Length: 219
Image (cartoon, rainbow, N blue to C red; front, side):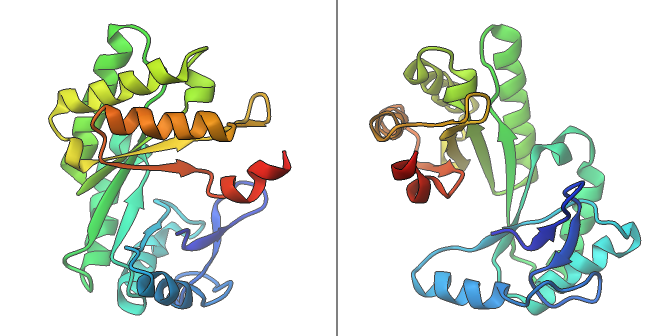
């Protein structure tokens, strides 16, 4: 879940969806949404920023998230792995003051995987992310990075994850919207993508954006 409302211009978080003194509260709805999802058996984590407009209060924001909400963990993107690991550790520590057993997910992008350099870079980023969290969310974009054959691309992603020896920590998230051509992946290709990942040994998978089921029938 997203725990804050982004600004209209720069996307910087402007208001929170939970009670906090660190920034304005857009609506204290995170707890209500959590309750509904928890009753359905879902594990609820939130995506949190590493920066807010008032940088002096960002630790307080994480501390309040742990204090006033029951979420089980946090998801970070790969900018933290790339150069802000120290900041991430500090903010995670603030959250864990009230949630010591929090689950941490790191998100990385698979990117283009043509050539040994790109593949070695992926493995390196995956291992770094794995060392910084309980799970690694790998965003795979077959419509953008897979060229003409999405199946081959997803097989490469799965092969490289297996190479790390950490399949159990991987969650492959397939991007089903091509922003360049403004086109959704059709249902047949979507099902084929999920089947390919399963056959290649990936245990955990999903898709983004989560409006796919809502909009795919209208495009």
